[in-house]
Image (cartoon, rainbow, N blue to C red; front, side, top):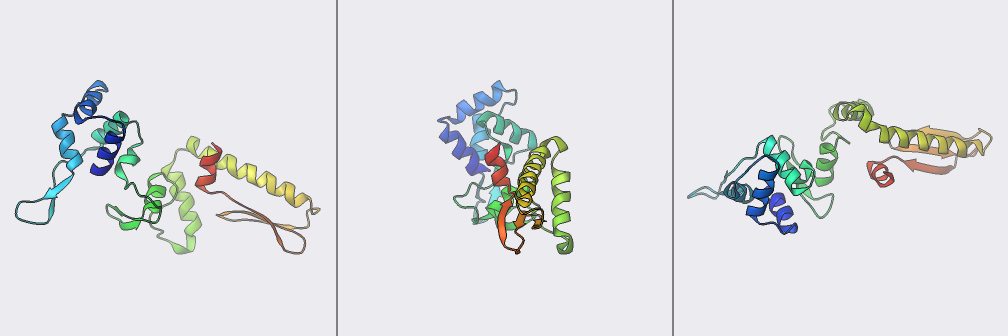
Length: 194
């Protein structure tokens, strides 16, 4: 988090005092000294190479910092990496790919699949439990749009082809069993259409 606060503050051309003033203005004051300690994150304990925490951030401070820096709280919590497969540390989960950490934090996929035999069911439960129904409608709309397009494509074969619906998308096959069209519903596609 320390690196993210520093990176975002610097990118906005804000000094520690300017960020402290912004936090005060939104009703959650933190001194520039406290912000400095947050940004320094970890320093070696005297006489050791082991880091010690200088300044912990509570949830209220996290939300206030995100608001003051005009970003999502996830932008402060998660490692900011150049590539999606860069290793990232997640508390209580260990090292995972950065993409997995972001997908988990955004309610798209669990970090760990506990039941391999019901992998898809577990993914659906995770999404249902992680996201209010009104926020899931984007995925529902994408599903309905894809289903309609696939049924239309299938109708071109007089309904004699085959359509498979899986957790990854919809595949349409002609009467000879050849793949005609494959449409995936990934979070990336959904976000691009919003």
